[in-house]
Length: 133
Image (cartoon, rainbow, N blue to C red; front, side, top):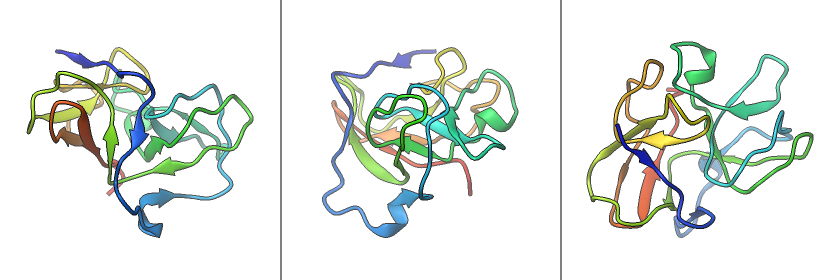
């Protein structure tokens, strides 16, 4: 298992994301979120960090935080877009929801993250999609 570390602040690099790349509206962060964090929506309607620690609702990635948000602040989630994310990545490998770092991604499966949620494009970019389909 190899966690994929963020290199600086992740940012969307898809040239022109369309309306279908944005998830929900008027979403509020349940806790602090960082750009690029994998997220799901609680039964309260608030956004929380997804985790693959267990095969439950928290492992169902709905989207990725487009920017940092503190608890109680609005947050935009994006889906099926390319991100400047890491460094020294191996191109073409699938990535999964991390079971050890909430909101993180990994090169290996976890208990709740058994299906890929993206793949590496090159040494710095990752294509990420949700597990909601």
